Length: 110
Image (cartoon, rainbow, N blue to C red):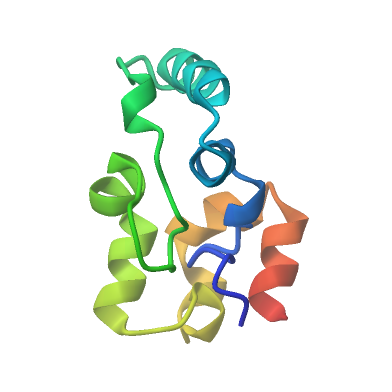
């Protein structure tokens, strides 16, 4: 499976944190930090916006590295993605993602 598909099925290659990191785009880092700060009601600084992908080697945002319950679960279960997990159909964690993102579900089925 494409390493840029996150454990949850989202495409990391489309994520602003990944794009800012890949292109060393400080303006996009600043924009993303402001947007994510507003969405999450926390302070996120531009220097926090560095990520090379959920399943790829390298740097990750603090959320992806430490806080994402889906990533922690998949790593603990040693599955390539949630699509390889026998519990995916009943999982409330990944269910929040795939119920709102048909592309993520397709990526996990792919």
